[in-house]
Image (tube, rainbow over the protein chains, first blue to last red):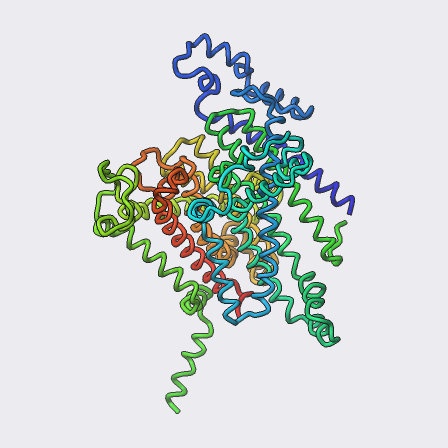
Length: 335
Length: 296
């Protein structure tokens, strides 16, 4: 097992190297120039040349790449060309917001999706199954941003019962940022009201972001439970007189969970992409919006490092998924 | 007696129909394929007949009539420039379908070539292609599309290319997978043993049997292409001319006016959902018809 994990981690190295090269070349292909962006349209050529020099943009591409990689290996991701803030600082400040949002969305998707998939599988052929299938199809077909807009309109504007933008009510609650997780910071500051407020702010964006994974997880759970339902060991378990919940949990779900876990891993990539849209609608200061704004502003340093870190998280999540197979299914042994 | 004698050959003929006839026949019996197909045909007709359906010029505004709610004059209301939302949705179907078809065509063509090279020749070609695919798949799709648009500039073709780039690694991986699964199939071994090799083996014996999953994925990719195109438009990266009636672009900025003009977000959004639903249903129906494991 340990050897498998180490081998998989080693395999990540060429992928990440290729990724840095790809992203580096790509940022240099972008039209426009950060020096011009910084100085504006009326900058003199001398000033532009001076700024390019100070940013290191006048050196050969190869040298720029080596310099970037050198910094990367030392944990230095450079500074934003535009705000001159440390990219790592910016990332650490914004990333917890995206994690809070993604985890909420995934929890919602898993906690609702797996039981619904199980239910529709066990009642297959009935109206429950048909209703579930139609619901999941619509869930898959609704674009995140449209769902987000409609949720915001319904629950934050038409019937204002939930907050529709931001991470917390800044008028009522103010406490220091320690971890940048709003929920944790509220608890650390001893503000239970702030904690509840932070949770409430998570509801609408979490629903918007979690609906597609929910629908996908529900479909996969249904398909995979249907496969398992007719197995001999399920019949045996019933015949032994085991109670329904025990059969469901220990015999059916445990065996049906493998494809579901795979999908949960794959959906993480979609969550990170969907975060860009959700963060836009709900004024959520996360990584997605940060990178999007960097692309628009041609802030090379942020694009390079931000995309790299998101990609790293994505491949790591999928590694965790692969490893978890062995725990879920002892028949799988990695050598 | 003669009736029976005549009927029998027809029956045996029916049993030996090809994979595609068989799949098509089963699709016609699949409710999801029929409903999905009907939705898509509806949108294609709307796109083709747009000038006859739309009551107004989608690009002409009337500033005296901006933000009108839905009513008999303007079924879906008007936007900030006073343009008729219904006419814009009708004409927008051309862009949406066009971008979807274009992007999937580009994506499938490149992805299939890469997948076929990797799955057929194996060796270092396979290694290089599949590692590149891994790298591309490690970037969240929408982010990749945003990056490509910001590189190529804004425009209809650029959006299509951006979405195609996101799809290429997926198609490559699927075709490679089906080719690998066929490598040891009896008829492939048989063809190889009588001396069929190289491109002929790939094109005549393997591809026709490996292409099913690719077609299903292409149909489902049309659905995601509609969503991705709209997402790019929503983020303000759609066609540069603000008069262009693109569905996603119509939704962008509406989150600022939700209180007063929710119809601006509602109707284009419903159009997107319907088109995506149509392609998803069609893809599902196709998958059930083509994938033998799902046969009941």
